[in-house]
Image (cartoon, rainbow, N blue to C red; front, side, top):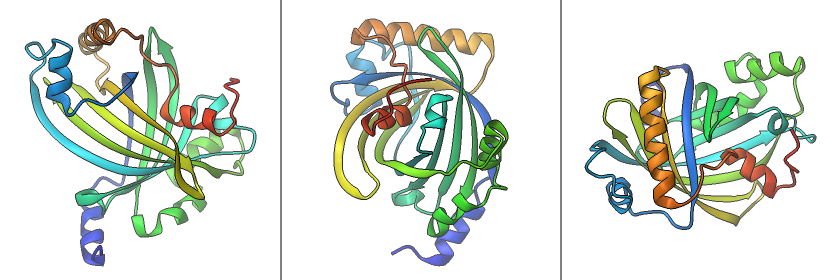
Length: 237
């Protein structure tokens, strides 16, 4: 059981909100490698991309949209995320807004606000929170949002050099009211949060090597969009 003081002190050490842009490529795999060094080794990339730090993170996500799939059609997602294990004191409400897909690379704005995991659902009623304000401004109304899918993700992640990150994600998707998995997916994802041209070139170079190694082009649907397709969204933009 989580101690109330432990939860409160854990939340207080984290930033109240974050705003940024992420650049990412991702590939849907048949199976998830054991860890990042193993994945790099299997692709013949160990020598060129030394692993600086590595850790595992597990979290549960609830995805939201309105009955007409307005967010999915606009390249937006709203996620309520609660972490497990040693990060169980951390919850977040996150909006991601796809700005562009370019040769398999997704450039997206991310707006996140920390929430108390004990009161996570209450945050969805507070339209003054940054992620919900963004949606209200974009759509010029407060959409009637409801959960359409739940995802539990186990992530093995590592920093490569100074600017890149590589993650291996195992994800189970289910309906909000039924924990039985409808689908299980394995992802390999690389990203950076620094838009400098040199960094984006380095990211693109690694993406090309991974594409050659796995024999598949980067996937151009986000994880919330993949879940939405399972739940009935037809993919219309």
